[in-house]
Each structure stands twice: as C-alpha cells, then as structure tokens.
Length: 342
Ligand code: HEC
Ligand code: HEC
Ligand code: HEC
Ligand code: HEC
Ligand code: HEC
Image (cartoon, rainbow, N blue to C red; front, side):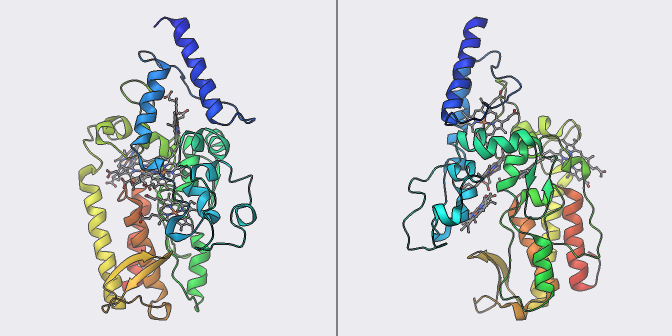
C-alpha cells in the first residue's frame, strides 16, 4: 500500500473511532503511531477487535449479583463507565436505590468496548494519567489511569480499619479485586503504626497497567487481550530483569503462594474458621458447620489478616504487581496476629 493510501486509511480509522466515540467534544484517541507500518489501518482495527472480542471485556455485568444498575454500572457497563461523571446513578439510572425486582437499568447492557476506553471518562483518564481512588489520588498512572479506576479494590481501607478496630462492626468489608491497590502500595489494609515497603520501580512504571498488560505485537500495535501472555515476557520484564523466562521469577510467585497459605492457616487457627472466601459483598470466615462467622467472633487482627490474604489472592499477580508491598502486608498481618515473625 502506498503512503497516500496508508494515510487515508489511517484517517478513516480515526474518523471511525470518533464516530464510535459518539462524536462528542472529545478529541480522537491519541496514539503515538496511528498507522502501523506493514499492516493497513483496517487490518489493525480488525486484529484489535478480534483480540478484544475474545477477552472478558466484551461482557457487561451491571446486573451483577442480582442488582440492577446502581453504581455497579460505573465499572461493569462500558457505557456507564464512559459517562459516569455526567450522570447521577442514584437518581437517573437507579431511582430508589439497588433493588433486585426493578427493571434492568440501563435497558441495554454495554460491554467494556472500544468507546469505554477511547471516549468519555476512559479517554479523560488516559490523557490525564490521574485517577481518584477510594484510598488515594494516583497522579502517575499514565494511560493505566483508566484501568485503575475499575481495578482499584474499591475500598477506603484506612477508614475500614478504623471502623473495625473501634469495635461494633456488623459486617466484614472485602477488597473488590484490586491490582491497583497492590501496584500503588496504597490500597490494602495497613496498621497505622507499622512500616510498609514498596517496590518503587514497579509502582512508577510509565503507563502502569498498560505497560505490562498491553505489549506491542509483532504487527506493531498494542495488544488488546489484556491478560498477561508469557510470549511477551521479554518485552514486559526483560528490560529490567534480563534473561527472565516467565512471570514466576526465580519461583517468586510460588513463594508468595506459600506465604499466603501460612497466613491463612494462622487466621484459621486463631478463629476456628475452616475457609476464607467472599459472598454478597462481604468477606466470609466460614465455620466448620458451614455457616458464616460473625464480627464478634473475629478479632481486628484476624480481620486484617483475612482481608489482606483474600485481596492478594484474588488480584491475581501473586506479588508481581508490587513485591515489597505484598511481602510487608503478609508479614505485618502475620506478626500482629501471632506475635511471631514469618
Ligand atoms: C470500581 C469499579 C467496580 C465497581 C463500582 C464494582 N465492581 Fe464488581 N468488579 C470490578 C472488577 C474490575 C472486577 C473483575 C476483577 C477480576 O476479574 O480481576 C469485578 C468483578 C465482580 C464480580 C465477579 C467476581 C468473581 O468472583 O468472578 C462480581 C459478582 C461483581 N464484580 C459484582 C459487583 C457488584 C454487585 C457491584 C455493585 C454493588 C460491583 N461489582 C461494583 C470492579 C467494580
Ligand atoms: C470499565 C471498567 C474497566 C476498565 C476501564 C478496565 N477493566 Fe479490566 N476488567 C473489568 C471487568 C469488569 C473485568 C471482568 C470481566 C469478566 O471476565 O467478566 C475485567 C477483566 C480484566 C482482566 C482479566 C481478569 C481475569 O481474571 O480474567 C484483566 C487482566 C484486565 N481486566 C486488565 C485491564 C487493563 C490492563 C485495563 C486498562 C487498559 C483494564 N482492565 C480496564 C473492568 C475494567
Ligand atoms: C510489572 C508489570 C505489571 C504491571 C505494571 C501490572 N501488571 Fe497486572 N499482572 C502482571 C503479572 C506478571 C501478572 C500475573 C500473570 C501470570 O501469573 O500469569 C498480572 C496479573 C494481573 C491480573 C490477574 C489476571 C489473571 O489472569 O488472573 C489482573 C486483573 C491484572 N494483573 C490487572 C492489572 C492492573 C489493573 C494493573 C494496573 C493497576 C496491572 N495489572 C499492572 C504484571 C503487571
Ligand atoms: C480497557 C481499555 C481499552 C479497550 C476496551 C480498548 N482499548 Fe484500544 N487502547 C487502549 C490503550 C490503553 C491503548 C494504548 C494507547 C497509547 O499507548 O497511546 C490503546 C490503543 C489502541 C489503538 C492504537 C494502537 C497502536 O498501537 O497504535 C487502537 C487503534 C485501538 N486501541 C483501538 C481499539 C478498538 C478498535 C477497540 C475495541 C475493539 C479498543 N481499542 C478497545 C485501551 C483500550
Ligand atoms: C522498570 C523496571 C522493571 C520492570 C519493567 C519490571 N521490574 Fe520487577 N523489579 C524491578 C526492580 C528495580 C526491582 C527491585 C529489585 C530489588 O529490590 O532488589 C524489582 C523486583 C521484582 C521482583 C521481586 C524480586 C525479589 O526477589 O525480591 C519480582 C518477582 C519482579 N520484579 C518481577 C517482575 C516481572 C515478572 C516483571 C514483568 C511482568 C517485572 N518485574 C517488570 C524493576 C522492574
């Protein structure tokens, strides 16, 4: 394809994306190289769309857990996310609050599609690199600011700690899947008087989530599969960890898994629980008879350990997002609970 055609095809893609974006006042997505050498813009759009289509991002879940709309849609519905700063979920999308019996609202669920990230709130995050999370404002997230809003963990952990430690709590908070809480070393449950370390080199990677999760493919565009693929390990980690062959660097993830098991066993020993899971928006300490234990049976130390255990286990990187922070969370939780060093 000659250069003029390539340029026209590139222009067409930008126009298509602007249309998809709803032709608002937003600028089209900024990319370093909108037209990749070698493949046409249309081929690139097709490849990216096929990758996205095979990812979990195509699914909307704003009716998650039987709840229609309400604020769940700000992360579980692509359109809801892109317009979240302009609508009032409580009055416009879910009058009367969460209610399993009410009509589905929004009427048409939208997956986390192109427009979710390349228009509206998603685009604003990518351009500003800043995102306000329940526990901190992160201003060095780069393009990953969009990812962080949804994958934050969704709790003000300092406030949750205070409330539980003060006594009288009637429910257990739980981390709603927080890679950002680990990566930024700011969003897991800490003791105010203990020291927490952070692997700054990971917390400060340019474009954060996007740097590792959206590597450049052979065809020269950034991958939209989102889950880590070991085929890209050299690109995502190799510049700092030369010779790395997989994400389990020198058995590091295995080691974190073993530490998590030790922490969980300590919680079970201290409380008599037989498992730690989550259900209906709460952390669950399961008793031997299958019932859920209540807050008067779980000490603050056991709750903090359970929260961090569950949060690290469910975010999926087994320490890679922030190795030092992960280790201090596990070790400090264990120390406070058992009085011993792990
Ligand atoms: C701040 C963004 C955010 C909000 C708000 C949010 N979620 Fe989620 N939720 C997520 C993300 C991100 C995941 C996927 C995490 C993963 O797979 O790593 C998720 C996953 C889930 C899952 C799947 C869990 C599993 O075990 O597979 C359920 C169910 C869920 N959310 C329910 C809800 C409900 C109900 C609400 C509203 C009360 C809600 N979420 C609000 C971000 C959010
Ligand atoms: C609008 C909210 C939202 C945004 C923005 C978002 N995600 Fe997600 N992400 C989700 C939800 C919800 C899921 C769970 C989808 C499912 O499988 O049902 C998910 C799933 C994932 C998964 C797969 C998790 C698993 O357990 O299979 C990865 C990895 C991921 N996202 C990374 C990213 C990255 C990287 C970005 C930024 C480029 C990003 N996400 C932006 C909401 C979001
Ligand atoms: C330093 C590179 C790096 C950065 C930065 C990074 N991740 Fe990850 N992420 C990983 C690795 C490595 C894994 C584990 C993959 C494996 O073991 O197969 C992972 C796992 C995950 C998972 C679990 C996926 C699954 O398959 O279960 C999610 C979700 C995720 N990351 C989201 C994010 C989000 C959101 C951000 C930004 C807040 C982020 N990651 C930043 C490297 C990174
Ligand atoms: C979860 C967020 C997310 C979703 C969903 C998403 N993208 Fe992207 N996309 C990104 C990010 C982040 C980048 C990298 C931006 C950059 O580096 O400037 C990107 C880059 C691109 C690029 C530039 C590629 C390059 O390397 O030059 C194109 C084109 C693109 N996306 C198209 C799409 C299309 C088409 C869809 C829907 C099928 C889509 N995107 C869905 C986040 C997303
Ligand atoms: C920008 C450079 C950079 C990138 C990219 C990077 N790391 Fe790191 N990583 C570091 C630095 C620096 C340390 C801290 C080393 C230390 O404390 O001795 C570190 C520490 C680690 C540790 C803890 C090692 C230990 O023994 O304590 C693991 C595991 C790790 N990185 C895995 C990864 C993986 C997997 C990737 C790719 C998904 C990755 N890193 C990407 C710079 C980076």
